[in-house]
Amino acid sequence: MMRKIIHVDMDAFYASIEMRDDPQLKNVPLVISRNPQHTNGRGVVATANYIARSFGIHSAMSAQEALKLCPDAHFKQPDFPKYKKVSHQIHEIFHEYTDKIEPVAFDEAYLDVTENKPRIEDPVALAHKMQQEIYDKVHLTCSTGISYNKFLAKLASDYCKPIGLTVVSKEDVLDFLFPMPIEKFRGVGKKTAIKMRQLGINNGEDLYSWKEIDLISQFGKMGHILFQRVRGIDDRPVEWQRERKSIGSERTFDQPLKSIEQVDEQLHLTAIRLVNELKKQQKHGKTIVIKVRNSNFETITKRLTFDDYLNNQTDTLEYYGRQLFDEIQNIDIDVRLLGLTITNLDPLDFENIKLQL
Image (cartoon, rainbow, N blue to C red; front, side, top):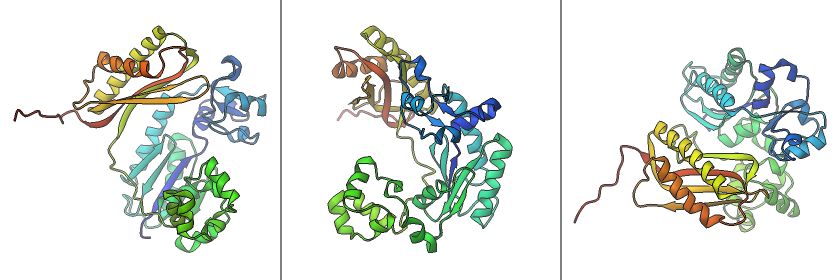
């Protein structure tokens, strides 16, 4: 209850960057995605500006569906290197206030400001100051949620967008959560939400009325978590010193790969990118994972773990990547997405030492 947590969520981040850089896009329904008219209907919406959202367009929607909802939408190819650069600028601003920062994505992060660098006691005043500085320096807006834990801060940042600031104190918890639609509770996906509504759990107040043992019997471990969350309980700290668990590289293709020669070429390029990132992060690992998605959006992953660390060499990762690929798909090749990841990471100066006993 003593923590002061701020969740910062940039407003329509990718779209806002594009509108900032090209003011002509400010007054049109802008969708950040490949244009489905140029890709035979393929593509997924990364985000959309608020004009496009008024038509029902949202992230993770197929670009084809977005076009049907708004035939006049302007589609803009995502520029992730640019978005990453802007995200880095915003994180530099965060570090002026605290080093206890848990990034969630390019456009959002948790900040623990219980003790902060400017020594501002009031988290509302601190959030206002930070919002203004972000706007002054990168010309983008954000919404902030302030509370004593991560769960409530996340819900609060989404409560009043764009350019919102919402505070949830201990005294406000039930008033805030009771009318909340059950789908808003983190961990409640589409299937779980359907089951909950069938059980008569439509909002936070309905959830609060259930006994913990009954929620566990229906939803397992998630039942215990939801029992706590609807009571404003979330003891998770802001994980600002967590170790990176994996390093990977993947690519989605406009036209699916249809031959093993195409797959080999892309595995080679993926391995190059992955090796460069491993060297940059000064890491190596014992497990290699391949990820393959086909034109039906079915995703398969397969992994291989070794006793010793894999060499950070392109031909090594490419070789084992091909082995794993052959176990997944060696006939009727259809690859929309291909990726390689190294997990089980340790610093490069950490090695296994074999002793002759």
